[in-house]
Structure formats: structure tokens, C-alpha cells
Image (cartoon, rainbow, N blue to C red):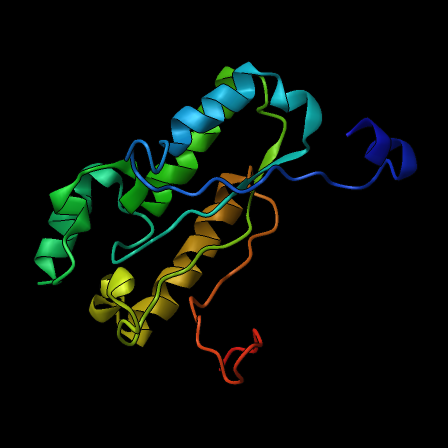
Length: 179
């Protein structure tokens, strides 16, 4: 961090992006626990922003994790992750607000969160790991994306946010060109 700032004081250093994956030891550590550990170890002294991957799955961006199950049941969705294993990971809003709360506790409230990947898959799952995409249509995807950008702007503690279309398709073997 010191070397970066010495070479280019205006360079913004963003932490590796936290990915909400629930608490699934030994495969995944809760992202809130991980961020707390980072902050306890002094990470705030070595970053200008906290990177994040706040997922939306099949839950609208303004819905908290406590309301996620009810929200998806109202629409008859088939992917019930938020009901089967209630956790903040299923909620864009709860994840972002949780990161912010932890940053404030550890004196990093002057830093922003930079979502380096976020969005709502739509139009059908191409893979069983993304079954929630079966529940989202393109109109919801558009509406929720705009709503999420508006929320981030209104919060005032979010930096640049990078929309990801969740497209892993490969058009040429051995390349990363997406369709």
C-alpha cells in the first residue's frame, strides 16, 4: 500500500472483493466474519475501498435477508435458497449494509464499498448452480439493476459499481470471449 501511494498518491487501492457464500466450513467463511477479521488485523490502514460481490439471486435489491423468503414465495419462485438457509447472503441490501456497519465499527467509515461484480441473472439457468436465474425475467433484471444503482447512489458510501451479466458462455474453445 505504501509503495503504491508513494508512486501514485491518487491510486485507489480496493481490497479483494468479499463474496457472500454463507457459512459453510470448511469450504466457505461467512463474509461478515472475514471482513471483521480483516479490520481487526488492520486492513483499514492498507485500503481505500472494500471490494464486494453483493449478489441478488432472485430477491429484489431493497428486500432485506429477513424478508427474502417471503418475497420469493409471493412470486412463486422455484429457487428457495433464502427459505432453505436464511442468511444475509441472499440479500443485496443486507450484504451491503452489513459491510458498511462493520466498516463503521472499525473506523473505516470514511472508505467506500466498490461492488466489483453484482447483478441479477435472468432468462434461465445455464447451469444447476444458477437455478435462481429461472425465476428472474429480463424486466425484473432491468428494474432491479436500476433500483440497485439508485440505492447505492443514495447511500453515499458506495464507489464505482460494476454490473456483471453472469454470462460464462464461451464462443471459442480456449478463450474467455463471452456470447
